[in-house]
Length: 290
Image (cartoon, rainbow, N blue to C red; front, side, top):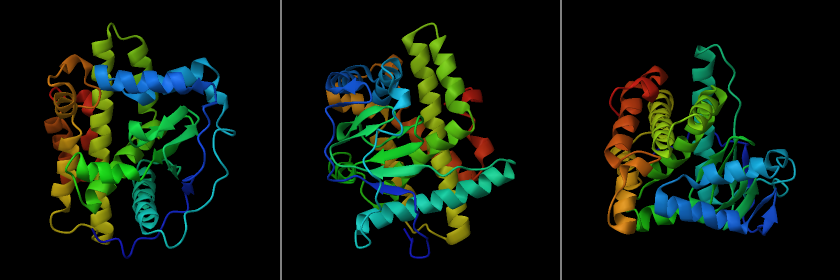
């Protein structure tokens, strides 16, 4: 992956080394345990539980007090610089795409943390993996996840790492376009948990497609892709499919509990985005077959 010509984003906050509060913003350690358990046993997105709990306990009012003082990463931190360049690339891509839609793109913040950190959606932990909080419009990532991506999920490579960031930024795009709110409202009136999960799958697959759109547009503008990069992203997408994770974790799969999509679906929608470079090709909610 070629990022030498990419400008670093100024929207990276470095909280690494900061102590995580045991309880802040109304969401305590018990809620975290519940979120992680639900994720493992039932396939429920842990950020969903943290989001709901935060709102019920007043978490939506904690955006200003939820974070440690913002600071930029050290200039000589190569891992942080990589993340910053990828984020900068997504900013320029989505600014252009939103202009074409007659809208203005608002850059998200990206927060680097270690072990755990407070967010406007509750307390986030490394075990949750990278995630996006719509209440403060920030992407959160513990860079230790990249080692896990390589060792546990067997998905190495810089572009695999970039795909992870682009997917979470895709959720930010959905948030700005009002898609996330529409899905949450539909989930509240869904007739069953399985139906609510199915909507979550379509939201996640759309974020995969949007990550592909970013890659296509960024490559057209700056020629960032090298041989093997697309395969790296597809390997990562496959590695974190619901069916594969559930099979590895408990030996069997329960499709009604899927919240992110199968390995094949995640690969298919990322490839659709990168092949087309067109946000209009990412309407998973109108797709008859995922």
